[in-house]
Image (cartoon, rainbow, N blue to C red; front, side, top):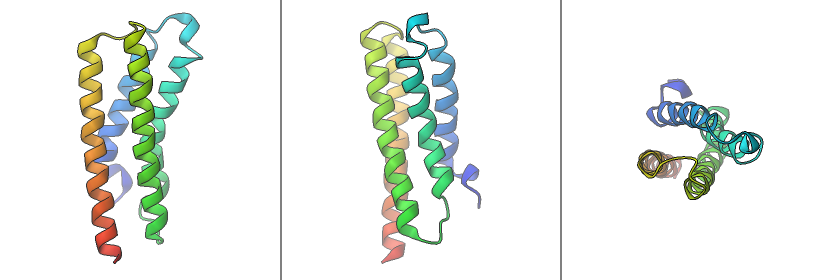
Amino acid sequence: MQYHELEVYKKLFQLADEVFRITLRFPKYEMYELGSQVRRSSNSGPANIAETFGNKHTNIYLEGISRAMGEIRETQHHLNVALSREYIIKDKYNELNERYNECSKMLWGLEKSLKSTNN
């Protein structure tokens, strides 16, 4: 199996792509501020999974999963800021937030599985 076959990777990649397109509609003065921050954090989640996937040292893979979960939380924060500044509508924010929560649960399950296999 390759990292890009993981369902959670696919979902996070899709979210990063969608967040990228959404940020292109932010005000021009936010393109290199909030827009850049949310683009980077949304892309870092799947990138951390790709970087550490299948590492022969399980603790390194677990660290990548942990970092991916942190990037999800950071992205959710940035989306919350975008909502408060009215750059995205509440319905879109809720949808993205729920999808990120689903990915967090998937990563938590993967982490739990790896820890039990490692023991």
